[in-house]
Image (tube, rainbow, N blue to C red; front, side, top):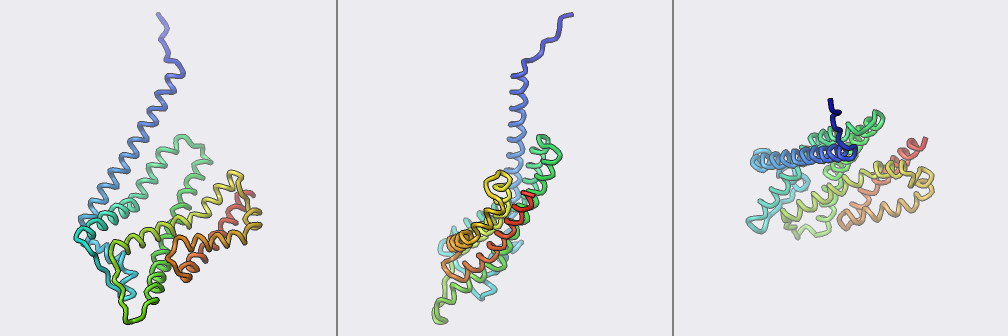
Amino acid sequence: MPARRKLPEKKSKSFSFFDHLEELRKRILFIVFSTILTSLVIFTLFNDLKIYDFFLKPLFSLNQKIYYYNLIEPFIVRVKISFILAALINTPVIIFQIVQFSFPALKHKEKNIFIILLFLITLFFSSGVLFSYKVLLPNSINFLIKFAPDTIKPVLRLKEYIELYLSLTFASGLIFLFPILISFLTKMGVVDYRFLIKHMRESIVGILIISAIITPPDVFSQLLLSLPLFILYLISLLFSFLIRH
């Protein structure tokens, strides 16, 4: 009986690689379609869910009104908010797809590190978003409004306010990921806790510069962001110490 032919080793690996890419493509498409579907639902129920009230709460708490200057502006803002909220709501779906795709290639210890990393990224980013919503944004608006006398009333535009809201909130969330970045650099051997202690003065200056860049142009807002950034720096120092030991 003739021996059964075997595929060359190289060709077998090629099929495995393309199968891997196909699985990745399917998971990305699932995330995209899930996000689009969720955004359509949010867009349809936008007024019923009172989403504008949530975003405008920092203004309403300061007894401020908001206006729009062309008919298409509320539509564009509504589309943008719906998509961003859909992406946030689908975060568990995104994480699940990442885990399902990555886990087969990871060892047991690497899986534990991966889960902890996802948890910490979610925790720190959410903390940054919450800090911006509760503290940074309302205090920044209040501080800027007080520059004008009571006889002058601000005319706040919807599009500009939402853009400020989203950019400030997203930037705050990213900044709060600083301990994760330091942990990664420590693991790579780029920095360690001794380096962070040695350059603490320069880091404080850097924190003040970063705060000045991503906040409105007032000292109060910069200090509001600088304090938690310094706390994050200390947390980064602790993480770096724990990783090295």
